[in-house]
Each structure stands twice: as structure tokens, then as C-alpha cells.
Image (cartoon, rainbow, N blue to C red; front, side, top):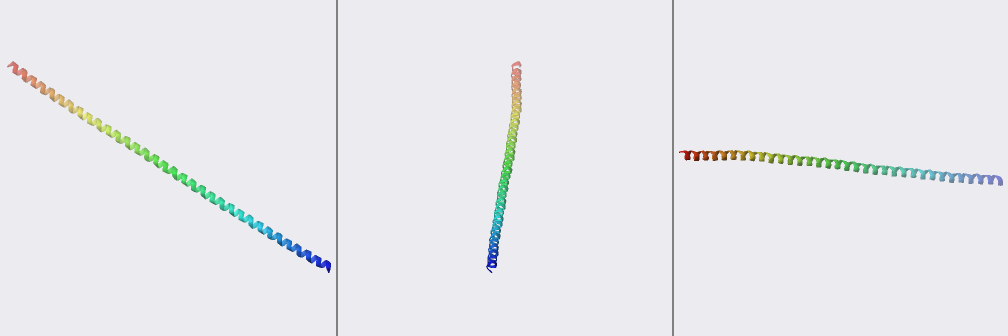
Length: 124
């Protein structure tokens, strides 16, 4: 009976140790799962942050390109306006020069007529 009692005690102790070992293993598995999930969440958050940064960089690049295009258009418009002003000034100078030539011709004609009158009066 004493041997049977010892065997039963031994079997119960073994069963208790196996139960403790199984619980330890289950806790280890649960801790590993939690660690993996935590790593996945961290990875997802890091990926999201990187995507956000990339999107902001792309938006800034687009904005810079728009500013560059608008600056070029403005410069082009200003250059065109300046060229138009120069062309208008050239046309005004040409018109003034023509007017001066006409006035000069009229004055010369008047002087010639006056000279002819004076010559005619001297002859008579």
C-alpha cells in the first residue's frame, strides 16, 4: 500500500508539473503573439508615417512646380508687355519723325515761296 501511495503521489506530482509546464508554455506563446502583434502594429504605423511624409513631399514638389510655372508665365507676360511698350514707342518715334519731315518740307516750301516772292518783287 505504501508503494501504491508513493506511485499515486508521484503520478500526481508529475501531472501537476506537466500542468505548470503547459501553463508556462501557453503564457510564452501568448507573450510571443503579443510581441508579434505589437511589431506588426509598429510596422503599420511606421509605414503609414512614411507614406504621409512621402505624400507631403510630393505635394510640396507639385506646389514648387506650380510656383515655377507661374513665375515663368509672369516673366513671359512681363517681357511681352515690355516688348509691346518698346514697339509702341518705336511707332510713336517713327510717326514723330515723319511729322517732322512733313513740317520741314512745308517750312522749306514756305521759305522757297517767300524767296520767290522777294525775287519777283525785286525784278519788277
